[in-house]
Length: 362
Image (cartoon, rainbow, N blue to C red; front, side):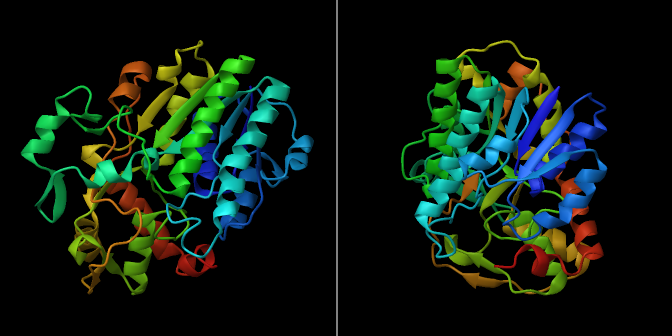
């Protein structure tokens, strides 16, 4: 089976290639990248060694995709993944929409032309910031947790909160950030193309993806950024929510997606509602920034972290994904525990002292 991966030289795209190759499948892998993200060039040689046929294409340019060979499936791993994109002064709002939503449009036209299926890697940031910020939380062991009231609300099937976190039914009403809006719009467009042209489409809403080789940006990979900065004695701050670092997210290694992708490649047509699933590490892989600092101190030694209580746009105190639907539909569960992910990041950071300068350069 021919599989095309967009953004193949990014962290997620390259990790998926390694996982698909290691799985021993008979996939013929193709991929393309525009290499505009610092660090992406470092993956080119290894991907070629793994047998990937690489193309230099910009997803925003429809004509670039004309050189790509026909493939049965496309994995869309290309996006500007920052929740601050379009508002932080590093990229414009127009650039964000052109890259994320315009790129999805060009990908879907490719799929339409070649009758390809599409697996869109989306994000947990499609969920309502206002609703997430309004969830009742308390601090336990230096981390936000749902209060008893919040846990009681989790038992209501219409709440969008399941026993293990946020479900696919949680509100997606604005505000969700410009980034979240481009991904939510991409989801809708992909599903409509699938229905209109008879294409298999799956939407995988991923939590915080993390692992060795992730690019060192706070807004795109907080676990990797924090560990690398701690090791290199770079400045670190707890921002917002009193400046204590109690905000919580769950981590997921992208290689844990590979087993699901194989099942989706072979899946029959499903109802539209079953084509969207959350994929996260869940409560077992959830950690606050303060707890991450404690982990770093135990691994590398103590250091100070500054406190900045001022709020930042689109920040939320707690977001943990409930992947029960993926478990029910696909028998999918993450297989890499968070301590193993953190250890992998730390080992890579120790072996690559230049990683922050290489992958976070502007």
